[in-house]
Length: 273
Ligand SMILES: NC(=O)c1ccc[n+]([C@@H]2O[C@H](COP(=O)([O-])OP(=O)(O)OC[C@H]3O[C@@H](n4cnc5c(N)ncnc54)[C@H](O)[C@@H]3O)[C@@H](O)[C@H]2O)c1
Image (cartoon, rainbow, N blue to C red; front, side, top):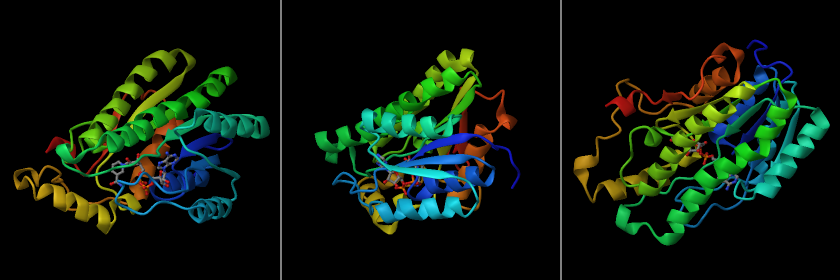
């Protein structure tokens, strides 16, 4: 590791586990202090994989502390703008700055289009779209006020560049995030704030557990012709959270200082298949 983010502060949502934890550890390893936010409580009922817990968030805190960097944690729902604002305002009051936002928290519910209920559609859009928006709004003004510029990274998906059948709501939400990043990049560019979206393919996290695989297989069985839509070019089908964290850390660092409004796939090539 180097000190590519020395002295910077990063606000990361969904940081209790999975990719969010990997982003926190990677950035701390590069010298950043971390505000780690997570729901750490049961996810909406249609989500077919286990929820994160306060113990998971504590484990992220221990791992970051072991790198020698500071971490603050907050149990908050990204659907709650006031809770996010309090967590960020308190952090900036204590540490004096905010430089990086990683809007990573999200949910996925595999189901055929006609199995989607008003409730599951609303849950996916509320968390993935409105929650991502709330995350940006909670932090962006602090970065603007400091006048140093910064980097905002929105975690979309391969489903936000190509599409993924059997999750229309998820695909719609991740396309919304892609558009959100591009439009924000235009308006925040004059403050030297870069905004990019990252598009992972399948990643080895709790979101990708056997329960999730079973739910996807169940949906594919209704229309097997679509089964090969996520075929990768590379031999590996599933990346590790750290592979995505490398790309996110690069976007957070000055090494990408002229990269904005970009869609960065870390997807084994599946969006091009
Ligand atoms: N795992 C994959 O295969 C994959 C592929 C492409 C994109 N993604 C995206 O990557 C991001 C991270 O997913 P992951 O794979 O680490 O999944 P994960 O389920 O392991 O982690 C997501 C975290 O977000 C938190 N979260 C969910 N809803 C929240 C809310 N309302 N408020 C606050 N926190 C909330 C969860 O508690 C959990 O800790 C998500 O946006 C996901 O859509 C994942």
